[in-house]
Image (cartoon, rainbow, N blue to C red; front, side, top):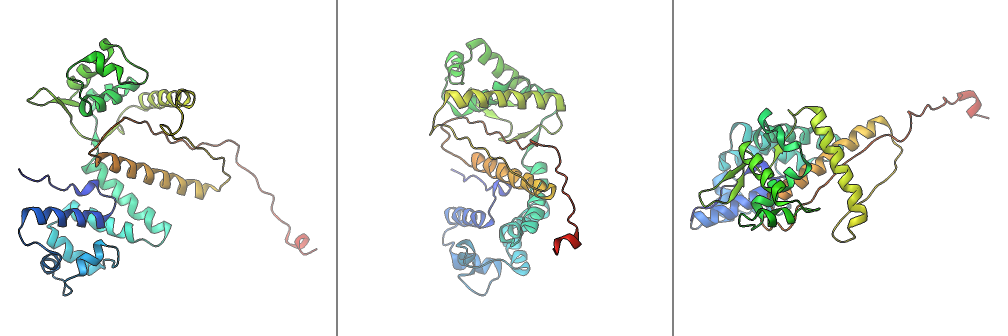
Length: 288
């Protein structure tokens, strides 16, 4: 049986990618070792790659070039790997933001499938995205009553069937030869969808969050909030941090091989006051 190829763009940590590459090579190539890996990349130290994967050493610009050649990464993939190294090794928030932005741009073009006009239907009902997950990851055996009952709150068999039919017609779900379903892409982006459509969906999920506060108790749910005072500059930084967390969650979900439940994660950050006007301090008076 052939091994699944590594998908670089699903990784948020270049060291984990290197570990994945090494593990895959050991399976497909007899005698592949840390020494062989280091030699392949042109490093004089036989343990260099091992120390990098373990976090004991970082990569320099020169060692990045050597690894790119050894990993046979070119073009966009090479750009992603290099940006990933700089992101993981960044020492300042500014540098992390800079390289995270670069990673995000590449991922949106390579990993995130951008829905077309025909597929905007995905956002017309809140439960369509839930059915898109359940239809693939659950063993519902073509029983729409069973499929609908898995949604919270439960859907009728008619609604579940219509959801599957709609998603298949839109190309967002695809039938395999054995009758099971797969997604056209693990992550889809609605950047091209009309704002009015996306805003309605966001409101629907906010209402679901309100319902969940009363319906569920820990540990099956998590909720947290904070009221903060901050500058506009830090507000922009906070948005980057939240987006970074969102990307990490997407990556974790894409790499999850033991799916057990469908969750909704919402992020909101909004003003609770007008802009604060600060009085300028009189320098002469401050000396009194």
